[in-house]
Length: 399
Image (cartoon, rainbow, N blue to C red; front, side):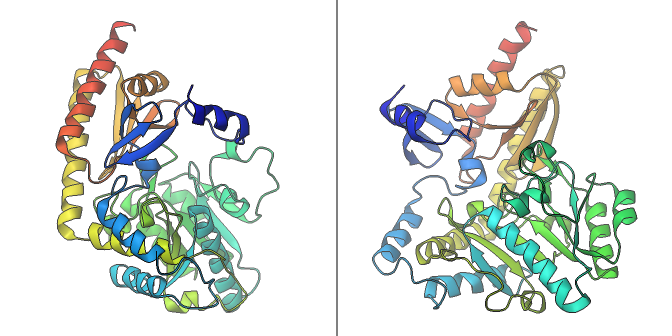
């Protein structure tokens, strides 16, 4: 165990299940340990570093902005923040933007906005939310309260009241529980932490229709699916359904702490001075980097390539499934967000990949999630597939 790992073991809180690995450098799709070992990163910091590590154009704008301005607070305007808000509006359905630092903060702001908007227009009784089972929206109390994985609740209850959970894609349950007191429904287009489950278009269409019928707001949590991850800039484009509010974070500034909550102007108008705030939200350095991220990733040719890489990776995994149907159960996802569900514990696959110096995540006991940088190349995809095939053959001989 290296020096950095030892320091971490001694002084960091034990709320993460960390590997005994310490990375000191990143380049493209690779990470390097304090001992100099090289790892192929198929996590991208859990869908954060969509342009990989130390992307040259991002380094340039970061260094230029760092010499100009770091922080002023949101009592004043800054050029990077104003320009980024305009860029997000130009690229999406939205008309105004609120900036924060993390995905959970973006969700908190969306929940507050939905309640405040309902309160101002229809009164205090319209304060309930519909959320989905198996969802994940964050660890703060409000975000946790709409997270439909109840193992995360233990020891933190009572949570936010007025949340109704229904199974994903259950249209009957959605219709049954929607009523005049619902102020919003929060949805991940793809349940990432839940195991990479893509929601059905018909379910989202019904949610949109019911929101319009009952004057409720459709909130899309695109923290994991936004910024090109699925082959579209935003996942809602796959469904051709616009939400009323959208939450972004993770890849927005490629690893710097920045999140955003987007909405139409008449909805965002419910936020008045004093109703919500963030000291560091919209930091000039983060916003300047995010501007460059969006410039690169929103290019139609770049997104087309992400879509193609995702199809290639998925097809190659399907070919493995045909060879090993007793091991691989299902492959799900869009673009470069892919879940592999196994008929066996995924722990041994995860550990074997780690031994081969390939990083993946394991959101569920039998599921591996792949979220490589969008700049990954086909040679690296082939290397991953060949390594996975070797591991599955090894596992099969021991079954």
